[in-house]
Amino acid sequence: MPIPVAPDDIYHNGAWYNRNGSPYPTGDQPTQPAPGASPYSYTNNTSAPIQAIVAGGTVSAIQVQRPGGGAVTTGLTSGTFRLAPNDVLIITYTVVPTLTLLPV
Figure 1: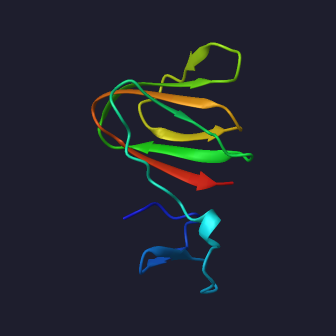
Figure 2: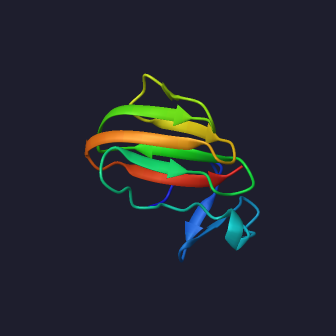
Figure 3: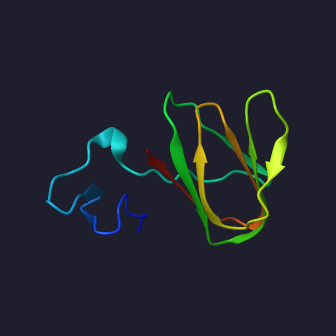
């Protein structure tokens, strides 16, 4: 099951609903792209910041790279990472993790 936008959200019939029972707009729904070959790079090509959640799998490194800069190793193998537009999340793994993207 996908990860909720907020702790008290409800997932029903493929969509998230807030605690008041209202659905989130389609563009605000979490997405789970399938990571490609390791090391996998995900670029935030949207015009807004997002949260990228890396969970599961066997991950050896997670890096974040800003446009025009070098990749910074986070020292983590899972967690939530805020990506500004054009930031790149680089995941190195041997068993594919789950990547969940949340609008902020």
